[in-house]
Length: 155
Image (cartoon, rainbow, N blue to C red; front, side):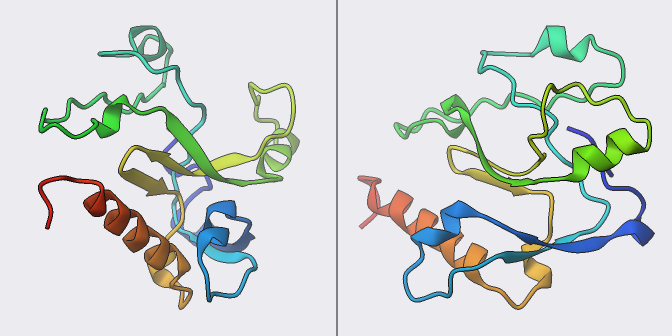
């Protein structure tokens, strides 16, 4: 993960985002989501799922690896046992970085990873709460509702 990937707070920006998972919503207009980026982090790459610490990755200089978390064994599927899904990318930013002389460790333009999900954990590089567009909030509440319906201890 790269903290403040897009620069200082004065370099904050808004971008129209294509977030395919929002197409699941009925009764809402389809179209780009207004992503507000303020000193935003990005996920630089998705690591293979391993139990414990990603020691090889942590050994790389200036690398921050999100810690592995152990979930309580409450009979439910552990959120941390699921693979990480890329839920959204911001295309075009890598070309800008290369243009400024930054070495980019990818063979092709894939865009910055700006939304991820692992089990019941969802993270974004942008601030959906700073827009009047409620689609991400509605989508997340639907995810919570579906998860609760799947639990045997909820009535």
